[in-house]
Amino acid sequence: MQRLKHLRSLREYIDELRILGDIQPIDVEVDWKFEIGAIIRRSYDLRAPAPLFNRVKGYDASGFRVLGAPAALSSRSGMPLARLAIALGHRPDASGQELLEAIVAAHERKPIPHRILAKADAPCKENVMVGDQVDVSRYLHRGFPQTTVGATFKPTD
Image (tube, rainbow, N blue to C red):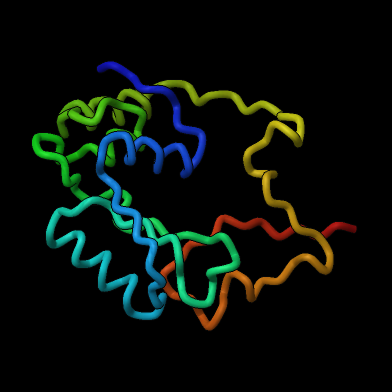
């Protein structure tokens, strides 16, 4: 199975979906409480492109966006598993059998050894907040129920 480049971030995954034509930017403001979930659900029903919400009510100035249905069936004809295939680093038209074989083969390989990066080269260090900069409510605004935040909280003493 031919491999694509390793995707290093959600941004790169979104870019790959954009190239494939399997993403739908939504630039009007949407309410996180009911609208986002309803639109995502409808995109599943219609096998529509993955919705990318660029303006979430109450978060407009934050720069936060929401990607819906990232692993749903693709809207692209003949490539139902394209989103999953891209996420796994394979070509968008890979079959379910090919993806399953790739997953089994990966499970049987030796793990990739970790390596320590300089802070400037570590993608996970792009947005670091310490001390008074930390505001957990920024991520949990009014109980925002439809989000998963990749955050690590560590004492600085």
